[in-house]
Image (cartoon, rainbow, N blue to C red; front, side, top):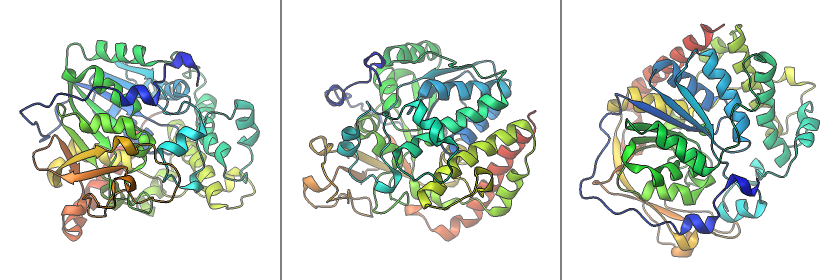
Length: 422
Ligand SMILES: [Ca+2]
């Protein structure tokens, strides 16, 4: 990523002044009505972000600003530009935010020592020619080049199916000042609800620059593992822990956090997915192509051999972002929330090596392993503007029928939106 993108150095982010504490702690009781909506997304991999955005755009017709992040955010903005046009929305702006990485493998290993090796190291160093070479090789080994390849496949699917709608690029490569300008203009008159379904880099910047206009933040970025062993913060937190800390350490904006264990409890059933596999309209087929692109990546990770891409069986997709947003906006009263305090230990942000992967105890209380052994702590604190939605504090059996009911309506609503498009 070039200098012009103004990606902040880690040092400059660390030196940002903390927020002044406020006396009155606001809590999230209900998040509707929504006057204005901001969505921060890392779409381009699985179906999850697309499902969330498609549902949001078809459910709320308020002015909306979408900010993309991670690799090639400007082309992701082009994909989303297609979706906005397909859904017939006219009051949606899309801005390419910054990605997380400045492009070095060292940054990744320093900030994320517990990142599982099997996922590969996502970097910027693969050029487009190399990506193209791998495009038709279903059985390419799963190293970092393939990880990055999931995303160009999806661009290709939209470019081929919607050449009339796909603008390349839809917006110029953005930088932080432009993004913040856009955000400030967007939120000038109304308070905004921010949905964060991506790593925190862009979210941290809008929080720092425009706090008064943010009504609340809904984010899929919990704890309690299930993303993988050992127990640890989830992907979105770990991808940019410094920025996550900025969002979670402020005390002015109510934040609703959905934990990984909560999202993992909702499982798609094969019969629900089978219904999606019958989609034969252009939009439905494009979304299935997106799922196939992700499956290529999954197959490579698992070392499965396929004769061709069309032989790949589409497995049940991940829907954690969608569950978060759907439950936050429509079913929050059905689930328990718990106040928490979140803190990154600044001196330990840059942990080297993989020797001490446990970051905190499985009951979410800080574990006295010595400061050098954990990266962050999450503690219970009733009076907090950060509310965690988690099944950790409830009886799973009691929630079973609620979960089934919520999940079924969620998938039906998504299917209806996708299937009725051209
Ligand atoms: Ca996401």
